[in-house]
Image (cartoon, rainbow, N blue to C red; front, side, top):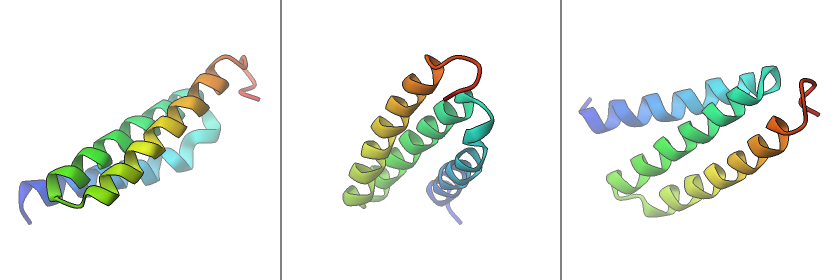
Length: 77
């Protein structure tokens, strides 16, 4: 495996991890957004620009969700 493949594995793997933890804290939603951004970068570096674009959209959606949850108070609702 080359470094780009390892980077992609870590980026997508962290997306899965943080997506599973989102209900625990708004900070995991933010971490998911960061992982989506890392995956988007991976897509563009790999040359799979459609993947990069879709992951960039997921980043924006996750950031929007984080802003909504972070402002909702301790319950996160």
